[in-house]
Length: 382
Ligand SMILES: NC(=O)c1ccc[n+]([C@@H]2O[C@H](COP(=O)([O-])OP(=O)(O)OC[C@H]3O[C@@H](n4cnc5c(N)ncnc54)[C@H](O)[C@@H]3O)[C@@H](O)[C@H]2O)c1
Ligand SMILES: [Fe+2]
Image (cartoon, rainbow, N blue to C red):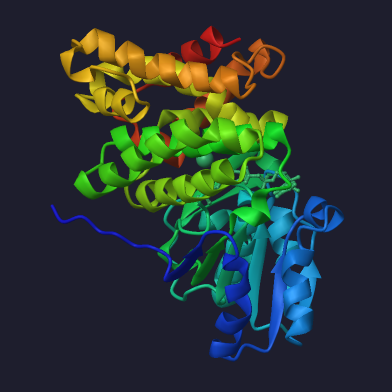
Protein backbone atom coordinates (compact mmCIF):
# COMPACT_ATOMS: atom_id res chain seq x y z
CA UNK A 1 0.00 0.00 0.00
CA UNK A 2 1.28 3.49 -0.84
CA UNK A 3 1.39 6.16 1.85
CA UNK A 4 0.32 9.75 1.15
CA UNK A 5 1.76 12.85 2.82
CA UNK A 6 0.05 16.25 2.56
CA UNK A 7 1.43 19.28 4.36
CA UNK A 8 0.79 23.01 4.32
CA UNK A 9 2.71 24.71 1.51
CA UNK A 10 4.97 27.27 3.22
CA UNK A 11 5.85 27.63 6.89
CA UNK A 12 8.14 29.94 8.85
CA UNK A 13 9.51 28.85 12.22
CA UNK A 14 11.22 30.55 15.12
CA UNK A 15 11.42 33.86 16.92
CA UNK A 16 10.64 36.76 14.62
CA UNK A 17 8.92 34.57 12.01
CA UNK A 18 5.89 36.87 12.13
CA UNK A 19 7.84 39.50 10.16
CA UNK A 20 7.39 37.30 7.08
CA UNK A 21 3.68 37.92 6.91
CA UNK A 22 3.93 41.22 5.04
CA UNK A 23 6.25 40.06 2.23
CA UNK A 24 4.19 36.86 1.84
CA UNK A 25 0.98 38.86 1.41
CA UNK A 26 2.59 41.37 -0.93
CA UNK A 27 4.08 38.63 -3.08
CA UNK A 28 0.60 37.20 -3.69
CA UNK A 29 -1.00 40.59 -4.27
CA UNK A 30 -3.99 40.02 -1.99
CA UNK A 31 -6.19 43.05 -1.40
CA UNK A 32 -7.86 42.64 1.96
CA UNK A 33 -7.45 40.22 4.87
CA UNK A 34 -10.25 38.72 6.94
CA UNK A 35 -8.58 38.19 10.31
CA UNK A 36 -10.31 35.36 12.15
CA UNK A 37 -9.62 35.35 15.88
CA UNK A 38 -11.24 35.24 19.33
CA UNK A 39 -12.14 37.98 21.85
CA UNK A 40 -9.36 37.02 24.30
CA UNK A 41 -6.66 37.63 21.71
CA UNK A 42 -8.08 41.05 20.91
CA UNK A 43 -8.33 41.89 24.61
CA UNK A 44 -4.77 40.72 25.37
CA UNK A 45 -3.52 42.61 22.29
CA UNK A 46 -1.91 39.44 20.85
CA UNK A 47 -3.57 40.37 17.58
CA UNK A 48 -1.72 43.72 17.56
CA UNK A 49 1.54 41.90 16.80
CA UNK A 50 0.04 41.34 13.35
CA UNK A 51 -2.18 44.36 12.84
CA UNK A 52 0.75 46.70 13.72
CA UNK A 53 2.80 45.12 10.92
CA UNK A 54 -0.13 45.36 8.51
CA UNK A 55 -0.87 48.99 9.44
CA UNK A 56 2.75 49.90 8.85
CA UNK A 57 2.70 48.21 5.43
CA UNK A 58 -0.72 49.76 4.62
CA UNK A 59 -2.33 46.36 4.12
CA UNK A 60 -6.13 46.38 4.47
CA UNK A 61 -7.91 44.03 6.91
CA UNK A 62 -11.08 43.47 8.87
CA UNK A 63 -11.19 41.64 12.20
CA UNK A 64 -13.75 38.92 12.94
CA UNK A 65 -13.35 38.04 16.63
CA UNK A 66 -16.46 36.01 17.30
CA UNK A 67 -14.78 32.62 17.74
CA UNK A 68 -15.41 30.77 20.99
CA UNK A 69 -13.38 27.87 22.43
CA UNK A 70 -14.75 24.57 21.01
CA UNK A 71 -16.13 26.62 18.08
CA UNK A 72 -19.68 26.02 16.92
CA UNK A 73 -21.57 25.65 13.65
CA UNK A 74 -22.98 29.15 14.31
CA UNK A 75 -19.43 30.56 14.68
CA UNK A 76 -18.61 29.25 11.22
CA UNK A 77 -21.89 30.42 9.66
CA UNK A 78 -21.70 33.94 11.08
CA UNK A 79 -18.07 34.01 9.91
CA UNK A 80 -19.14 33.09 6.39
CA UNK A 81 -21.60 36.01 6.37
CA UNK A 82 -18.99 38.39 7.80
CA UNK A 83 -16.45 37.26 5.19
CA UNK A 84 -18.93 37.88 2.37
CA UNK A 85 -19.72 41.37 3.71
CA UNK A 86 -16.03 42.24 4.19
CA UNK A 87 -14.85 42.21 0.58
CA UNK A 88 -11.76 40.28 1.73
CA UNK A 89 -9.93 37.91 -0.62
CA UNK A 90 -7.90 35.89 1.92
CA UNK A 91 -8.05 34.84 5.56
CA UNK A 92 -5.50 35.20 8.34
CA UNK A 93 -6.38 32.94 11.28
CA UNK A 94 -4.73 34.12 14.48
CA UNK A 95 -5.21 32.04 17.59
CA UNK A 96 -5.40 28.52 18.85
CA UNK A 97 -7.12 25.57 17.25
CA UNK A 98 -10.52 27.23 17.70
CA UNK A 99 -9.68 30.27 15.54
CA UNK A 100 -7.79 28.23 12.94
CA UNK A 101 -10.51 25.57 12.71
CA UNK A 102 -13.26 28.18 12.37
CA UNK A 103 -11.26 29.86 9.60
CA UNK A 104 -10.96 26.53 7.78
CA UNK A 105 -14.73 26.06 7.94
CA UNK A 106 -15.33 29.61 6.67
CA UNK A 107 -12.79 29.29 3.86
CA UNK A 108 -14.13 25.91 2.74
CA UNK A 109 -17.76 27.09 2.65
CA UNK A 110 -16.94 30.28 0.75
CA UNK A 111 -15.23 28.08 -1.88
CA UNK A 112 -17.83 25.26 -1.69
CA UNK A 113 -21.19 26.90 -0.84
CA UNK A 114 -23.10 23.61 -1.10
CA UNK A 115 -21.69 22.79 2.39
CA UNK A 116 -23.22 25.91 4.01
CA UNK A 117 -24.97 23.80 6.67
CA UNK A 118 -21.44 23.03 8.07
CA UNK A 119 -22.51 19.63 9.49
CA UNK A 120 -22.25 18.00 6.06
CA UNK A 121 -18.50 18.67 6.24
CA UNK A 122 -18.09 15.97 8.90
CA UNK A 123 -15.61 13.20 8.08
CA UNK A 124 -14.12 13.30 4.62
CA UNK A 125 -16.56 15.52 2.75
CA UNK A 126 -16.21 15.58 -1.06
CA UNK A 127 -15.42 19.31 -1.40
CA UNK A 128 -14.20 20.28 -4.86
CA UNK A 129 -12.37 23.55 -4.32
CA UNK A 130 -9.53 24.58 -2.04
CA UNK A 131 -10.31 27.02 0.75
CA UNK A 132 -10.01 30.76 0.25
CA UNK A 133 -6.22 31.36 0.68
CA UNK A 134 -5.63 30.72 4.37
CA UNK A 135 -2.71 32.08 6.41
CA UNK A 136 -2.41 30.66 9.91
CA UNK A 137 -0.64 32.11 12.93
CA UNK A 138 -0.93 29.81 15.96
CA UNK A 139 -0.86 31.49 19.38
CA UNK A 140 -1.04 28.21 21.33
CA UNK A 141 1.40 25.31 21.03
CA UNK A 142 -0.86 22.32 20.75
CA UNK A 143 -3.26 21.62 17.94
CA UNK A 144 -0.94 21.92 14.93
CA UNK A 145 -4.02 23.04 12.98
CA UNK A 146 -1.76 25.25 10.82
CA UNK A 147 -0.32 22.11 9.21
CA UNK A 148 -3.22 19.67 9.49
CA UNK A 149 -6.10 18.84 7.18
CA UNK A 150 -8.30 18.58 10.29
CA UNK A 151 -10.80 20.95 11.79
CA UNK A 152 -13.19 20.31 14.66
CA UNK A 153 -16.57 22.00 15.07
CA UNK A 154 -19.28 21.65 17.75
CA UNK A 155 -22.88 21.02 16.74
CA UNK A 156 -24.65 22.47 19.77
CA UNK A 157 -28.09 21.40 18.47
CA UNK A 158 -27.07 17.73 18.66
CA UNK A 159 -24.60 18.18 21.53
CA UNK A 160 -21.63 16.77 19.63
CA UNK A 161 -18.25 17.79 18.36
CA UNK A 162 -17.41 16.55 14.88
CA UNK A 163 -14.12 16.19 13.05
CA UNK A 164 -13.64 17.19 9.42
CA UNK A 165 -10.64 15.92 7.45
CA UNK A 166 -10.12 17.69 4.13
CA UNK A 167 -6.92 18.41 2.20
CA UNK A 168 -8.77 21.36 0.62
CA UNK A 169 -8.82 23.04 4.04
CA UNK A 170 -5.03 23.23 4.38
CA UNK A 171 -3.36 26.51 5.17
CA UNK A 172 -1.08 27.85 2.41
CA UNK A 173 1.20 29.90 4.68
CA UNK A 174 1.80 29.07 8.35
CA UNK A 175 3.79 31.30 10.68
CA UNK A 176 4.90 29.57 13.86
CA UNK A 177 6.48 32.24 16.00
CA UNK A 178 7.02 31.42 19.70
CA UNK A 179 6.67 35.14 20.51
CA UNK A 180 2.97 34.81 19.61
CA UNK A 181 2.69 32.20 22.40
CA UNK A 182 4.51 34.03 25.22
CA UNK A 183 1.31 35.50 26.67
CA UNK A 184 -0.33 32.11 27.24
CA UNK A 185 -1.07 31.54 30.93
CA UNK A 186 0.39 28.44 32.63
CA UNK A 187 -2.80 26.34 32.54
CA UNK A 188 -3.37 26.95 28.82
CA UNK A 189 0.29 26.21 28.04
CA UNK A 190 0.06 22.93 29.95
CA UNK A 191 -3.24 21.87 28.37
CA UNK A 192 -2.26 22.69 24.80
CA UNK A 193 1.16 21.07 25.27
CA UNK A 194 -0.50 17.88 26.49
CA UNK A 195 -2.76 18.00 23.40
CA UNK A 196 0.41 17.98 21.28
CA UNK A 197 1.79 15.05 23.31
CA UNK A 198 -1.49 13.18 22.75
CA UNK A 199 -1.22 13.80 18.99
CA UNK A 200 2.32 12.42 19.02
CA UNK A 201 1.51 9.32 21.06
CA UNK A 202 -1.78 8.51 19.31
CA UNK A 203 -0.20 9.22 15.92
CA UNK A 204 2.68 6.87 16.78
CA UNK A 205 0.46 3.87 17.57
CA UNK A 206 -2.46 4.57 15.21
CA UNK A 207 -3.31 1.88 12.63
CA UNK A 208 -1.93 3.77 9.62
CA UNK A 209 1.41 4.80 11.22
CA UNK A 210 4.52 4.22 9.11
CA UNK A 211 8.22 5.11 9.18
CA UNK A 212 7.88 8.75 8.15
CA UNK A 213 5.07 9.55 10.60
CA UNK A 214 6.91 7.62 13.36
CA UNK A 215 9.98 9.82 12.84
CA UNK A 216 7.89 12.98 13.29
CA UNK A 217 6.01 11.70 16.32
CA UNK A 218 9.08 10.38 18.14
CA UNK A 219 10.88 13.70 17.68
CA UNK A 220 7.78 15.55 18.89
CA UNK A 221 7.63 13.42 22.07
CA UNK A 222 11.33 14.06 22.70
CA UNK A 223 10.89 17.83 22.35
CA UNK A 224 7.74 17.93 24.50
CA UNK A 225 9.42 15.88 27.23
CA UNK A 226 12.32 18.34 27.15
CA UNK A 227 10.43 21.63 26.78
CA UNK A 228 6.87 21.56 28.11
CA UNK A 229 7.88 22.29 31.71
CA UNK A 230 10.00 25.23 30.53
CA UNK A 231 7.20 26.55 28.35
CA UNK A 232 4.84 26.47 31.34
CA UNK A 233 7.42 28.64 33.13
CA UNK A 234 7.50 30.88 30.06
CA UNK A 235 11.17 30.39 29.16
CA UNK A 236 12.12 31.32 25.60
CA UNK A 237 13.75 27.94 25.04
CA UNK A 238 10.63 26.16 26.27
CA UNK A 239 8.33 28.20 24.02
CA UNK A 240 10.59 27.65 21.01
CA UNK A 241 10.79 23.89 21.63
CA UNK A 242 7.03 23.51 22.05
CA UNK A 243 6.26 25.61 18.96
CA UNK A 244 8.31 23.18 16.88
CA UNK A 245 7.14 20.03 18.67
CA UNK A 246 3.44 20.68 18.15
CA UNK A 247 4.04 21.41 14.45
CA UNK A 248 5.94 18.13 13.98
CA UNK A 249 3.14 16.21 15.70
CA UNK A 250 0.63 17.97 13.40
CA UNK A 251 2.67 16.99 10.31
CA UNK A 252 2.46 13.41 11.47
CA UNK A 253 -1.05 12.80 12.78
CA UNK A 254 -2.74 14.78 10.01
CA UNK A 255 -1.49 12.12 7.60
CA UNK A 256 -2.12 8.97 9.63
CA UNK A 257 -4.91 9.68 12.11
CA UNK A 258 -5.33 9.56 15.89
CA UNK A 259 -7.17 7.23 18.25
CA UNK A 260 -9.47 6.69 21.18
CA UNK A 261 -8.08 9.45 23.42
CA UNK A 262 -9.29 12.06 20.94
CA UNK A 263 -12.48 10.07 20.36
CA UNK A 264 -13.23 10.25 24.09
CA UNK A 265 -12.05 13.88 24.53
CA UNK A 266 -14.39 15.33 21.88
CA UNK A 267 -17.67 14.46 23.68
CA UNK A 268 -16.30 16.10 26.86
CA UNK A 269 -15.67 19.30 24.89
CA UNK A 270 -19.16 19.18 23.38
CA UNK A 271 -21.00 18.32 26.63
CA UNK A 272 -19.10 20.25 29.31
CA UNK A 273 -16.97 22.63 27.25
CA UNK A 274 -13.88 20.98 28.77
CA UNK A 275 -10.72 22.48 27.20
CA UNK A 276 -9.54 20.03 24.55
CA UNK A 277 -6.01 19.60 25.92
CA UNK A 278 -7.21 19.01 29.48
CA UNK A 279 -9.64 16.32 28.30
CA UNK A 280 -6.89 14.57 26.32
CA UNK A 281 -4.35 14.79 29.11
CA UNK A 282 -6.68 13.19 31.67
CA UNK A 283 -7.65 10.33 29.36
CA UNK A 284 -4.22 9.62 27.81
CA UNK A 285 -2.57 7.36 30.46
CA UNK A 286 -5.71 5.22 30.86
CA UNK A 287 -6.05 4.65 27.12
CA UNK A 288 -2.30 4.03 26.80
CA UNK A 289 -2.73 1.19 29.27
CA UNK A 290 -5.78 -0.08 27.37
CA UNK A 291 -3.86 -0.03 24.07
CA UNK A 292 -0.56 -1.40 25.40
CA UNK A 293 -0.92 -4.92 23.97
CA UNK A 294 -1.71 -3.44 20.55
CA UNK A 295 1.30 -1.17 20.35
CA UNK A 296 4.14 -3.60 19.56
CA UNK A 297 7.50 -2.05 20.48
CA UNK A 298 6.25 1.54 20.24
CA UNK A 299 6.12 2.21 23.98
CA UNK A 300 9.83 1.45 24.13
CA UNK A 301 10.34 4.34 21.70
CA UNK A 302 8.10 6.58 23.82
CA UNK A 303 10.13 5.77 26.95
CA UNK A 304 13.36 6.38 25.02
CA UNK A 305 12.09 9.74 23.75
CA UNK A 306 11.33 10.70 27.35
CA UNK A 307 14.97 9.97 28.19
CA UNK A 308 14.40 6.79 30.24
CA UNK A 309 17.76 5.01 30.69
CA UNK A 310 18.46 1.45 29.53
CA UNK A 311 15.16 0.94 27.69
CA UNK A 312 16.80 -1.71 25.52
CA UNK A 313 17.44 -3.86 28.57
CA UNK A 314 13.84 -3.68 29.74
CA UNK A 315 11.27 -6.38 29.10
CA UNK A 316 7.94 -5.52 27.59
CA UNK A 317 5.99 -4.88 30.78
CA UNK A 318 8.75 -2.63 32.16
CA UNK A 319 9.14 -0.34 29.17
CA UNK A 320 5.38 -0.08 28.68
CA UNK A 321 4.94 0.95 32.30
CA UNK A 322 7.88 3.36 32.02
CA UNK A 323 6.26 5.12 29.04
CA UNK A 324 2.95 5.52 30.88
CA UNK A 325 4.73 6.70 34.06
CA UNK A 326 6.59 9.41 32.10
CA UNK A 327 3.32 10.73 30.69
CA UNK A 328 1.68 10.79 34.13
CA UNK A 329 4.69 12.53 35.68
CA UNK A 330 4.76 15.24 33.02
CA UNK A 331 1.01 15.76 33.30
CA UNK A 332 1.30 16.13 37.11
CA UNK A 333 4.32 18.42 36.84
CA UNK A 334 2.42 20.85 34.63
CA UNK A 335 -0.64 20.84 36.89
CA UNK A 336 -3.18 18.82 34.91
CA UNK A 337 -6.02 17.23 36.95
CA UNK A 338 -5.70 13.44 37.13
CA UNK A 339 -9.35 12.39 36.89
CA UNK A 340 -12.68 13.37 35.38
CA UNK A 341 -14.18 13.81 38.85
CA UNK A 342 -16.10 17.10 38.83
CA UNK A 343 -15.88 17.24 35.01
CA UNK A 344 -18.03 14.34 33.71
CA UNK A 345 -21.26 13.05 35.27
CA UNK A 346 -22.08 9.35 35.70
CA UNK A 347 -25.60 9.82 34.24
CA UNK A 348 -24.07 11.05 30.95
CA UNK A 349 -21.74 8.07 30.44
CA UNK A 350 -23.98 6.22 27.94
CA UNK A 351 -24.23 9.24 25.67
CA UNK A 352 -20.53 10.08 26.02
CA UNK A 353 -19.53 6.51 25.16
CA UNK A 354 -21.83 6.34 22.13
CA UNK A 355 -20.52 9.66 20.86
CA UNK A 356 -16.87 8.62 21.42
CA UNK A 357 -17.46 5.32 19.61
CA UNK A 358 -18.85 7.19 16.57
CA UNK A 359 -16.03 9.78 16.52
CA UNK A 360 -13.86 9.80 13.37
CA UNK A 361 -10.67 9.62 15.47
CA UNK A 362 -11.72 6.39 17.22
CA UNK A 363 -11.49 4.44 13.97
CA UNK A 364 -7.69 4.97 14.02
CA UNK A 365 -7.27 3.32 17.43
CA UNK A 366 -5.01 0.24 17.26
CA UNK A 367 -7.33 -1.78 19.51
CA UNK A 368 -10.88 -2.45 18.33
CA UNK A 369 -13.25 -1.12 20.95
CA UNK A 370 -16.96 -1.00 21.84
CA UNK A 371 -19.45 1.38 23.44
CA UNK A 372 -19.39 -0.82 26.54
CA UNK A 373 -15.60 -0.74 26.90
CA UNK A 374 -15.45 3.03 26.31
CA UNK A 375 -18.09 3.52 29.01
CA UNK A 376 -15.94 1.46 31.39
CA UNK A 377 -12.89 3.59 30.55
CA UNK A 378 -14.79 6.81 31.30
CA UNK A 379 -16.15 5.28 34.50
CA UNK A 380 -12.67 4.34 35.69
CA UNK A 381 -11.71 8.01 35.38
CA UNK A 382 -14.56 9.49 37.46
N1 LIG B 1 -7.40 21.20 13.57
C1 LIG B 1 -6.72 20.32 14.27
O1 LIG B 1 -5.88 19.62 13.73
C2 LIG B 1 -6.98 20.22 15.73
C3 LIG B 1 -6.21 19.36 16.52
C4 LIG B 1 -6.46 19.30 17.87
C5 LIG B 1 -7.45 20.07 18.42
N2 LIG B 1 -8.22 20.88 17.64
C6 LIG B 1 -9.29 21.73 18.20
O2 LIG B 1 -8.74 22.98 18.59
C7 LIG B 1 -9.51 23.54 19.67
C8 LIG B 1 -8.61 23.87 20.82
O3 LIG B 1 -7.66 24.82 20.44
P1 LIG B 1 -6.57 25.36 21.50
O4 LIG B 1 -6.33 24.32 22.50
O5 LIG B 1 -5.42 25.86 20.71
O6 LIG B 1 -7.29 26.56 22.25
P2 LIG B 1 -8.37 27.65 21.78
O7 LIG B 1 -8.12 28.11 20.41
O8 LIG B 1 -9.73 27.10 22.07
O9 LIG B 1 -8.07 28.86 22.77
C9 LIG B 1 -8.37 28.74 24.15
C10 LIG B 1 -8.26 30.09 24.85
O10 LIG B 1 -6.91 30.48 24.87
C11 LIG B 1 -6.77 31.86 24.59
N3 LIG B 1 -5.45 32.09 23.99
C12 LIG B 1 -4.97 31.53 22.85
N4 LIG B 1 -3.70 31.95 22.62
C13 LIG B 1 -3.38 32.80 23.63
C14 LIG B 1 -2.21 33.55 23.92
N5 LIG B 1 -1.11 33.52 23.17
N6 LIG B 1 -2.25 34.33 25.03
C15 LIG B 1 -3.33 34.38 25.82
N7 LIG B 1 -4.46 33.67 25.59
C16 LIG B 1 -4.48 32.89 24.50
C17 LIG B 1 -7.91 32.15 23.65
O11 LIG B 1 -8.29 33.51 23.71
C18 LIG B 1 -9.01 31.23 24.18
O12 LIG B 1 -9.80 31.87 25.15
C19 LIG B 1 -10.53 22.46 20.04
O13 LIG B 1 -11.77 22.76 19.47
C20 LIG B 1 -9.93 21.21 19.46
O14 LIG B 1 -10.89 20.20 19.20
C21 LIG B 1 -7.97 20.97 16.32
FE1 LIG C 1 -6.01 17.39 19.73
